[in-house]
Length: 467
Image 1 (cartoon, one colour):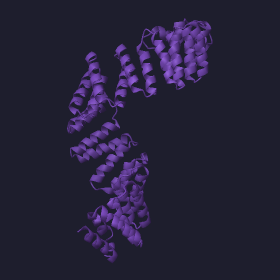
Image 2 (cartoon, one colour; image 1 turned 135 degrees about the vertical axis):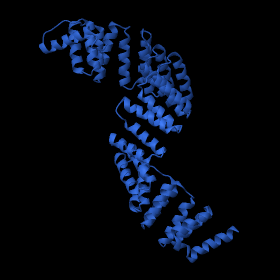
Image 3 (cartoon, rainbow, N blue to C red; image 1 turned 90 degrees about the horizontal axis):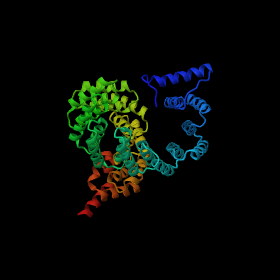
Image 4 (cartoon, rainbow, N blue to C red; image 1 turned 180 degrees about the horizontal axis):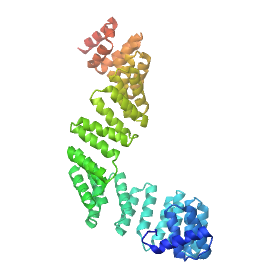
């Protein structure tokens, strides 16, 4: 039980206890008072004071099972699991029908990652308990630890049957549905739940998110509207409704809803960013970039804010500004593949080929193995005369994309350029057999090679063989 300003008796007990600690005068408290004092200190994270209260409580009430259970709880909290286990065995011999003993026993098993044993003990506690909702919730959590989401979902549902106001259990039910990709089942369950609890803003909000996931935007919109009707201060519902309105192309209304959130609490970087995107969609470029700047001012570490400014200037072909802001994003998340690829593309447009090559290399290192990334890096290496590096890059690409004409024509041109005619001839013949229309690559990137008599002869032989 927590202390509150309204509960004068409990406040009085707490004041007396703390006064006793300061004066060293020993005062008497009944066991219930000690329980409330300990509970208060545990809830507020004052473990040292809780331990003092337990010690003094047991001196005055050595036979109190509840006070001794608090001692167990502290031992578990401090990872003194063997000590806690021994205390519980003693208590079980005294009071074998105390559900709290089973709960603490399960807690110890859980701490030891023995979650199945924890579940077995909690199931025993169910036979002893009058209030079942907390036990169902604990069992559900143990099943989550085991990644048994169907079982977890069942017990969180049981918890809600006992207490339909337990929103933590509701969130956990939806988490299980989401993990199992059961959107339609989640929608059915939430609609059933709302039949009995029609003004639950949390349920309406979660229902809207489920409809959003399956792209039923009209129903998602209605759900978020009901969430707002149920609680007109529910910021999450306004944000989600704004996202739906964006999907429906209703950008002005989306801006209105994002703006409402900033009247309810301090402006969030997410809302500012979405408002910027909406203004950009409406063609209000000046307002868009203003909100992007507000986003990064609000949260300088939000890489999506810097990326939005980068994309804005990139579209405007102001590549120097775009480069400045993509560097900001990379400084925040230096392992983001798409940032490095965008960095490379911007540098390529600025004809900063060495930097572009570095960007594509980073993108590849972090797992972007798309053909266009290999090809783009090859072309910038070719621009700066890094022929061997270009060959190595394309040979690596060929491991991912064997028998690819774009790669083969480039390898052919590079080998001819580096005076390795045999290799050049081999790759040229491969390329022609794969797709003779891609010979334009050779014409554009290696025009001098096309004039070689040996190369002309290969084309002539291929044409003759094809007829």
